Amino acid sequence: MEIIVAESAGFCFGVKRALDLVTRAADDGSRPVHTLGALIHNPQEIARLEERGVHQASALDEVSSGAIVLSAHGVDPEVEEAAGARGLEVIDATCPFVKRAHENILALSREGYSIVILGDRGHREVEGLAARAGGKAEIVSSAEEAERLPFRQRCGLVVQTTQRPEALREVAGVLAERCRELRVFNTICEATVKRQESARELAEKVDAMIVVGGRNSANTQRLAEICAATGTPTHHVETAGELRADWVRGVQRVGVTAGASTPAWIVDEVVQRLRELEGGTPGP
Ligand code: F3S
Image (cartoon, rainbow, N blue to C red; front, side):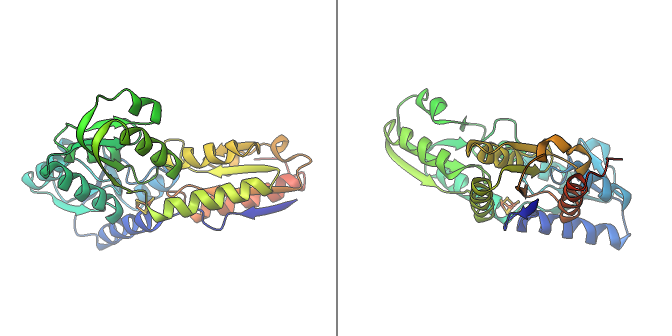
């Protein structure tokens, strides 16, 4: 069985940067380091950070001293201010591409545009984007939802960085007919576009696809959707232990891709386990 790992799989620039920032802060050892919520959407990598002394706080009032790290997804600006007001050192790991989307929203707000965000409701990045619009943005996750929006004079569209370009095209098409003036900021990040394209290309030429990443990771879920849409049987796993022998039985070529927050060591373990399954080695 041939095992092919997608060209663009695993950690993106923004996740690497966030992990570097937090690791440096932890290694320094001069103060306690907490992250506000999960730094990235990968439970296994979060567990490794915990071993290095980086603790996860679910709310600011759980942290009384030291440094607080804001995740790569960005946060509500009020949270950042509140962290400063508590006397905490704020380490801002927000991805620069997410920050660019924040700036686009602020500019649209200043200029009086109604703001529409294409994204997953409840996702931290989308909440941070909506907060920049003073809570007045409409969030849509599909063209069908955009069709239900009222007619507007001036409308600005900003996109969660990990959305599919096709979804952007569809929603922008709908909004163009539902407002007099439309400004579109394509804030999908380049790493996302490349990862999605290489996953689709790989899925088209293999007999089965394995998508590796946190179940709570929006970009990993999207990769799984893209691969499944090619018609190739697709399985989303967080770890190598979840792989099943019947997924690769009789398979000539299997493809592996991974979300932006999936570390290389988990991808390596998945590839290794696939080799064992091929050789008929039973699981642990
Ligand atoms: Fe940033 Fe794109 Fe990664 S927005 S966190 S580089 S997926």
